[in-house]
Length: 300
Image (cartoon, rainbow, N blue to C red; front, side, top):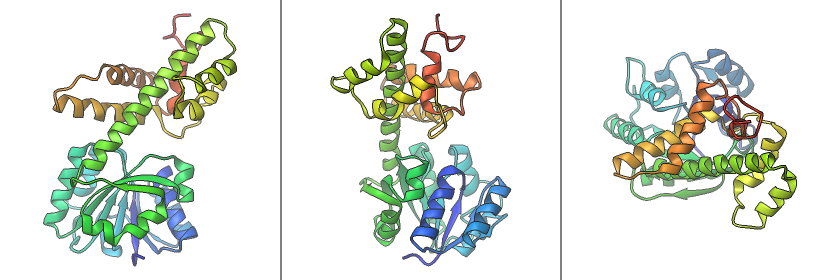
C-alpha cells in the first residue's frame, strides 16, 4: 500500500475516489487541492487531510498524486505552467492521471515528469460517480510499466476491473476516446430513435423492449432510455463533457487522416446543447433536442 496519496481535482469523481480509498480501504489521503478551495477544505476536513493552496505542497506531502481535472488546459496548468506546479520537488513521485484528456497532453506530461525524476500513469475511467465511491471503476491504464506494477494494488482497490494497455503514454487515452466516441454516438442515436417513435405515436416502453431484443440493443438503452422518456437528466456524465470527448476523437481522427461523420454529427448535437445552456444536463439530455415539442430545435 502506498504511504500517502494526494488528490488534485476533487469534484464529483475525484472526491469520491478519495473517500473510497480513505474510508473503505484505509489509505492515507495526505493532501487535496482544487481550484474550488471550499470543496478542497470540506473534503480535507472529512478525510483528515490537508487542503493545500499550492500544487507543489501536494507533491511534497504525497508519494502518489492522483489527478482528475477537466480538460487539457487544466492539465497543462497543474504540470507545465507557472511557478507553482506538481513537478516541483517531484523526484521519486508517481502521478496517476485519471481524467479524459487528449493523448497528446498525457505524452507532454509524461515527458516533463520523466525529466523531473517522476513516473506517470494514465488510469482513464469508464464509469460514473457511484462507481468511484464504491471502488467499482473500470480503468484503462497505460504508461510506465514499473509504476503500474508498484501501484497495481491501489488501482485494483479503485476498480472492479482494469486493463493495462501496452505502448506507453497516451495509449489508454486513445482507447478512452474510442469508448466515449462510441458511447456518445449510441446515446445520440437512441435519442433520435425514441424521438421518432414518440412522433409516430408508439408506446415507448414497447419500443424499448423491441430494441432490447434486436440489433438496436446497447448498453446505453439500459442506462439512458428511461431517463430520456421521463426527462430525468440528473447529471452523471454531462453533455459538455460528451462534447469535449467527441471533440478529442475528432482531433485524433483528423491527425490520422480519417473522417468520422457519425462522430461529427454527435459532437454537433452536444455542442448545441452546451451552447444552448443545457451542457450541465446528463448526456441523456440530448433527447431534449430530438423528442417532439421539447425544445426549439425540434421540428414539432
